[in-house]
Length: 412
Image (cartoon, rainbow, N blue to C red; front, side, top):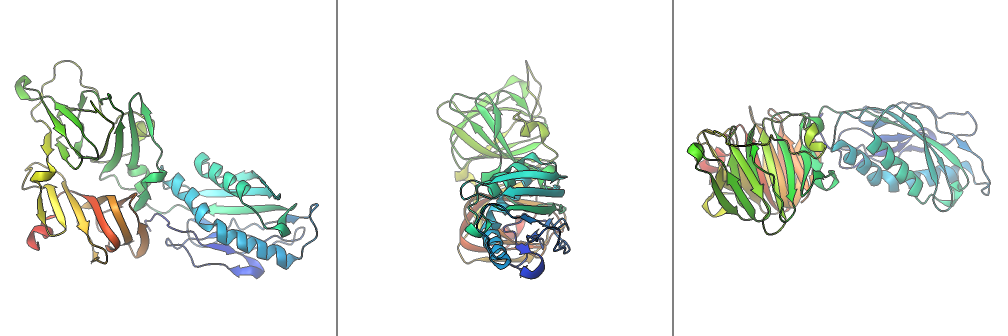
């Protein structure tokens, strides 16, 4: 099953029973209840990404006033309900880098009235970002008084899905060099799909990418104003100012430079095909420098927002009709609140969305996933998906290869 988990369910095993519905991926976060010295609750892990390790939690009496076992279990139930969304955010943040996080994580929490102390006692997950987040979360949580002075060991089990459909780009780490920073939004590592990679680029005022080869087909969507320079055939180089809302199509084998001569520039970039973007995650641009005189057979094309044609909900910038050699199609998709897109699948194409505004629910492979104004979405070929807009949506929509965008022309 492919999904980004929007909300984890929390289950306390044993006499307490289930404390919530399973999360959207069918997985749960399970915690063993505290037991007096060696009387484990046991229980089996659920079939999903996060679950109990199968070992029992333990509660060791401390200096706090004695509370009944029922009071302590109730306090843990309250905590798990409140920690649910925050704990899932730890997973979501780690999964922006890779989805195949798997293993067990057990933490000892020494509970205090103020800041508690959380210590990792077992870690086969080996994901520093996830572990640090869970440690910080459990240490900062305000545990209820019946648990003050107690020591609880909580085991977690993480099981990887086979990919992700949605990622919150507000959780994605930025890395850079000088005045250029890059965030890898989608790649094979975090999506399980090598059809395309998506980046966000930030260039500080006065900065530039430098002249770089286009090793893979690129489509840029500019979120701010800047300047594009390129190498032309026969030494006829060119340049053009770009505004927010414009796009650029850069074919493989061309040379281009993107600069921010006046103010900061942000852009979304899709490269086809995709891959594992390790260099970009380290802050390097995923392209080679073009030094000296270069020989090229094609040049980037600036696609102005004013020139794009609108067909129903799609304003198409690039498709086979406008760029004959293109391996992708690029549009701005606008859906009013309340609109639904019926379930369908693309036989050969991957669909990408970079949401600019609005939100709703994406159903992919039968799983409901929240989409917000900071979401990016990828739907692999053959994947059934549907969408319901709860607020007016505006998004950059990419298909690779091109093709499905033609349905908008057939039914404008």
